[in-house]
Image (cartoon, rainbow, N blue to C red; front, top):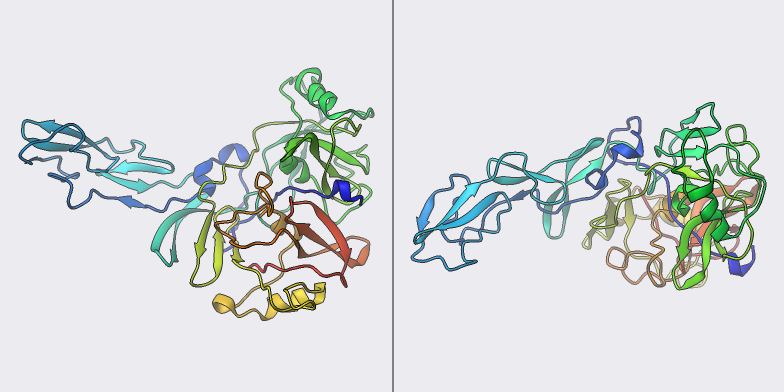
Length: 403
C-alpha cells in the first residue's frame, strides 16, 4: 500500500470473563453498558456537619453558613434548619451520577441492560464496575455476524443494530459528494435518515476471511474491492478522511477530492465516549478494558527481540506472549480486531490512551491474524495514527499481549 494511505481505526466485540450471550442491538447499549464507575457506594463523609444521610436528622452544628451543609452525598438534599444541617434522602431511583441511582439515601451502581456488576482490584483498592455480558462491537474479538436481509434493499446487522444500504451505487464520489448523497439524496426502504458511516461502523463490515471483496458478498452484492468513504475526518489533516478498503480490509486515510465508492447506513450504533474505559493495575503490569472485557499488557518490552529494543518477527512475537509470565501468565497475541480496538484516533502520536498505556511508542504492533490467501503475511496496527496493514512474518514489529 502507498505510504500516503497508511492509517486506521477501531471496531468489534466481546466481554471476556463474562457470560457469553446473544448481543442486543446497539440501541440497547448506553454508556452504562460499557463504562465504569470507581465509586459503587457513595457515603457521606464522617466529618460532614450533622451527617446522617440515611435518617435525615437535623444536627446542631452551631451555625450553617451557605455551602457548609454539603455532605458530598448526591443522594441527600442538604439544607439548614436554624442552627443545624439537615440531610434528607432523595427518592429511591433518583439519578446520582453516571450509571448510578439512589437507594436508601446512598448512591448505588445501577448496571444497564446486557451488563452485570463486577468487582475488580487495583493498587488503589477495589471498585465495582459494569461489565458487558455480551460482546461490545467496537472493542474486542469478532462475534458471528447476524445479517438480516430485509428484502427492501437493506441489510440489518444484529450485532451492531445498524441498517445498511445493501447494494452501493455504481458511481464513485468525492468525500463531500458522498456525505451529501447519504445525508440528503438517498431515500431507501421508505427512509430518508441515511448517513455516511463512521470508520468504526464501516470497518465492522470487513470479513477478514474473505478478499476481493473482504465482505460477505452474497449479503452485500456489488461491493467493489476498493476504498469506501467514511464520515470520519483525520486528526491534523483536514483535507483527508478515513476509508476502508474492501479488497483486503485495510483502513487508511485519503485526500477528500479523490473519488471512491460509498455505502450508507442508518441507526445509532455509535461507540460510547472513552471516559473510564480502562482500569490500570500498575503493580501487576496489566490494564483491564471495560469495553471488551480483555486484559492487556500495560507496557511494552523495549530490550528484547531481534533488534534488542523489543521488535520481533511474527513467530518471536507469538512465542513471547505464550511464555509471558506477567501477572500469572495466560497471554497470547491479539487478533487484528482486538488490537485495532485500542486505537484512539484523536490523540497525537502515539494513537493510544497514554494514561492506561504509558510510554507507548508510535510503532507497529503484530496481530495474530493471517492475511487470507497469503499465509506468510500477518496483520499489524501502526500506532502512529492507527493505520493497519499486513506484512511478511519475517518483518520486525513490537508486541502487546492480551488475555
